[in-house]
Image 1 (tube, rainbow, N blue to C red):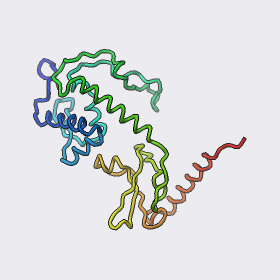
Image 2: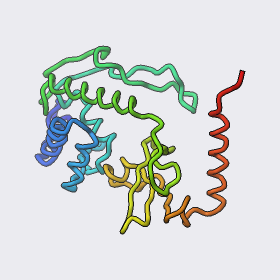
Image 3: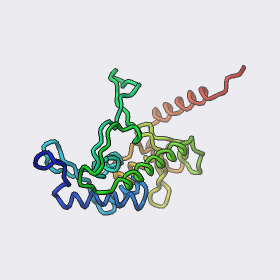
Image 4: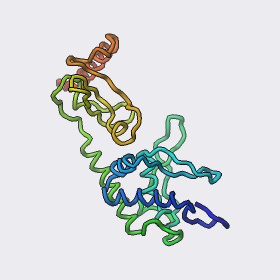
Length: 231
């Protein structure tokens, strides 16, 4: 944050400093932003944020919030300009968007400009780990394989809202199961994007007939489009 004279200083709130330090310590120890969120969740800790008026607000821990902290070079004591570039693709509204540049392409980097929470080599290591985690996630983001169980598309479904793979959870003795968005349920403590239930038979009694019919039509169209074209 900016102190008197527009000089960038560490947040004077010691709790804020400790929370930011915990984010970096957790990531360096666990090497995963999601695992760092789980660490915060286990202790019921939120993340600090200053609004434009300088007022402190504690916000819910999310992947976006944690990665924003981890990717901010100011926490490594550096002043950086030109971290983003104008993207070639335009948004739905017709406006040209912005895309992040690689660290090697940042236009201006001035190290040791601000009081740091971590040193620059540590910051570079964090960026490399985030890049590797992202590459591994995209590489393993495959179609999946069918799994045993009574749920439709078990092991094959991806969330159409957030893009993460759906996982299965059971309740009680296991007679009731459901698919849910794993990151929302396990990491963010947020409401699941979807939760179709099943009780020992396809689709489950909580699915109305109209919804089952719509899903079957969608699966049929998908199967037809996936058939190889005869020559």
